[in-house]
Image 1 (cartoon, rainbow, N blue to C red):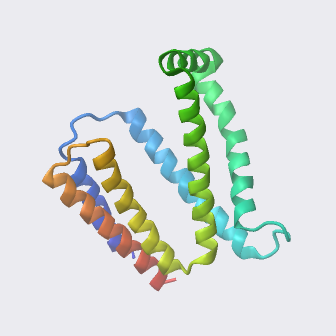
Image 2: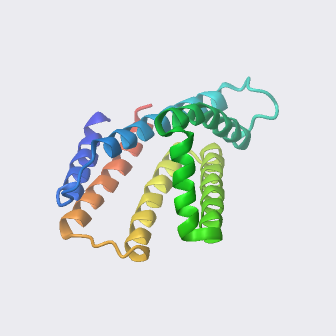
Length: 181
């Protein structure tokens, strides 16, 4: 199973090879996000699989509870790192440049991200593990292709090869993990 992680690591390395800008803070935030996402998935599966969580705790309610818990955990961290004045200043600058468009973009972004995760939790409870793994891999393909067209991101052949290898590695890992459970 762990050998199937090698194509993911190699693919990401290839896709990133031509990217010359690197920021340790961004890297740390991305790794923190990965750890948080993995912890959420493990906790959710454990809670949904235990059977003794209460009659009203379906996958949608588990996601809602996790979202509320995450909000209360991250607000103090945001205040500690940014401080209220920096957060307010950033909001005011963004609002001055975008006005109501900025506010609506924030509202839409939050709503659609919540709905995306809500559907992911519902899918997790309805699909068998292999179908969920394949669907999750295809989601990544769609996101990458869509972002290339929407944001006009220049993609090098090395980037395409690296992304393809990483996506294939993700699929192989998911399938191997489900086979050897």
